[in-house]
Image (cartoon, rainbow, N blue to C red):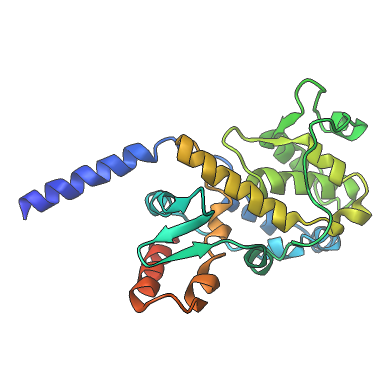
Length: 252
């Protein structure tokens, strides 16, 4: 009995050491808290550009340890989570169902040769550094008060990108995203959901190379494969139980 406890304790220390470099500075809880502050006019403004379903995202507390274990199952080659008796994939359909974002439409691709715009300068970027901090965007959002104009929509979407959809480990957002927000009438035409999925897969792959990963979008992404996993004819009963254990502990 004592020997078993020592082994478990050592394993726990090893996991804590492994996940120590994960960053969750800006997370979905901070996004949800801002959503709760929005007025009905501001909510309608966000809905008008195709991001209304994100306002329904719940606030969860994540278990870093279990997230780490799930990410360990990621296969860079197959682009799926590999378990003992089956695989879980993340597809554009999953993203559309969970986040309510378009997965078919104009691609969201940040071009290296994208000209520096007046809009980027307006939001505090410079040609040599086309990134702004999420903290500065949050401050700007706070200063807008109850406004529901174009400036609010762009600022809130940038905040959403930096905290939830395209988070990174240094708390910044690429201002080239503003090129897709210049004309708000066309924002809903872009395949934002597909861009989110590709960004997550990129970070999962990088995480295999170095232990530096933002867990923020993982909160919602975790539910992507559930229906795929449970509806697969190749899955067995113990596979379903394994999935239930993972998700029961991941969201406390």
